[in-house]
Length: 194
Image (cartoon, rainbow, N blue to C red):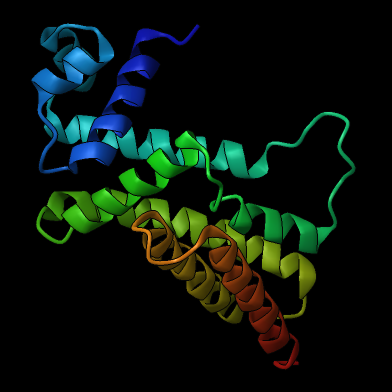
């Protein structure tokens, strides 16, 4: 059973995914979570605290569904690990749809709410570094700058393809195919930099 804070963060992700950051109302969040507004403020202090905690929550949840392995599943090689990490962002499950939508809403809101930018930049940097580390397992002699640039391109593509998929302008299977092709292209590019 989830603790109250987790229940509130799950509710915040749903409300943000449904109404956007600008549509986030503490009263609606409290109702969605089944708690009082006072309890929301107790845990998160203010609206910015809610947004920051929700961003951390959706990042942790994404890390979990992109890296958790089934106990008796065979281990993945470096290429499989990279592909799984990126392709599992394209799953037709409520959790992934909600996460991707909430992430997109938070990112879009940062255009108008500068106080979100630092937290989003930090979360994005961690994601880019994680992908660069996976790329480095495949091309250990590639420079750190080249790995970071490849990871930046791949993570930005995930965000763009997710937006198109979630908005209905790109079928899920095609988004996954485009992502696989981009991974191939980045690996070739890194291999050519020797």
